[in-house]
Length: 211
Image 1 (cartoon, rainbow, N blue to C red):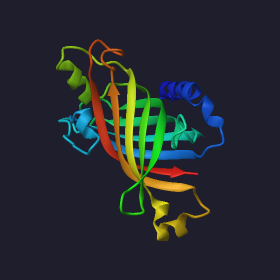
Image 2 (cartoon, helix red, strand yellow):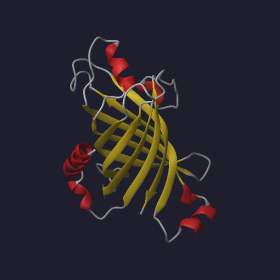
Image 3 (cartoon, one colour):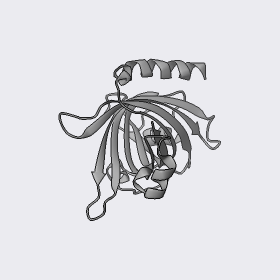
Image 4 (cartoon, helix red, strand yellow):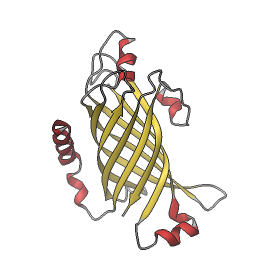
């Protein structure tokens, strides 16, 4: 456990130096379950659970360092997180840490005056023990996975303050509260981080507070 804390701090110092700017701070909690679904269809909610049925509970902290990306209304944040993997008896449980840059876009839905926030994150993921579902996925190719991999995160969240009763409840307490769907993906980036291309998806739900 001290080792994973040290790695988290190192990743945080690398990815979040720019996060001292004037933007909002966010704290997020996620519950995700391993999935066999291909990344290309997982982003639309397609879910095919892994045989191991392993899952992870995760928390992250981030801070906005820009409210635009090349002039577009896309907020940019620096984030660092910690995960606990429940391996359901297939192997001892493990810990993970990640650090990533995330782009956020507030999308107004057509015909209704409500918004969704779409997010896309990119960075690094390190685990103390490679998840059992990931080990099996790589074993099918005759290779082994690695602890340090590329990290990709995709989120779709509903801002709660856009609903009048919740706005009254949350006003003057927090900037915003979000609930939504998350996909995170560990991969070798076509062999850049390992001997062969491959990866594993985790899908689930998240709760985020922005203040």
